[in-house]
Amino acid sequence: MSDAKRDIELLNGSLGGEYFGIAAYDAALGTGLLEDGVVDVAKQFQGDHKQHAQRIREAIVGLGGEPIATKTWEAYASEYPPSPLKNQEDVLRYAASLEESGASASVASVAKFSSPELSLLAASIAGVEAMHWSALLGALGENPVPVSFIPVS
Image (cartoon, rainbow, N blue to C red):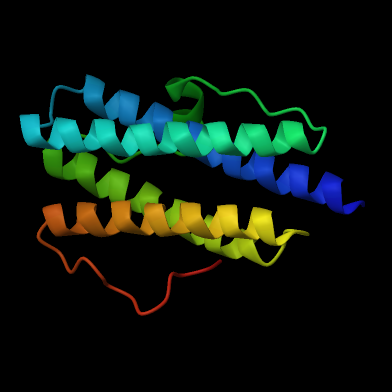
């Protein structure tokens, strides 16, 4: 497989994760379970995911590839069902788990890219996902830095 083709596949995988995050924040915001201050933060985090998605799409097109399409929240939730979301804490806990997964996936991809620019993009996204994860853990009253290294699976 060519470097460009592998990079496009990796980028589309990352794009799918960003789309999932955008849809998850839409769903969270639509629950009515979030307090006003939390709504503002959720919108900010969703905005970060939208910016990540845009940069990833641009990278894919720049390599001559076709960005994947987004799915509905229902499609994502059927693939990765959340626990029952009954209150703000449940929503924050689910969001924290998604941000942790996003940080882990981005870190795991860094060494797989063929160019330093794409590795830097993945590392930059991983850092923001880790900040989201940390902020959500802090909002839950948990240790905001629970690990010394971002887990990579």
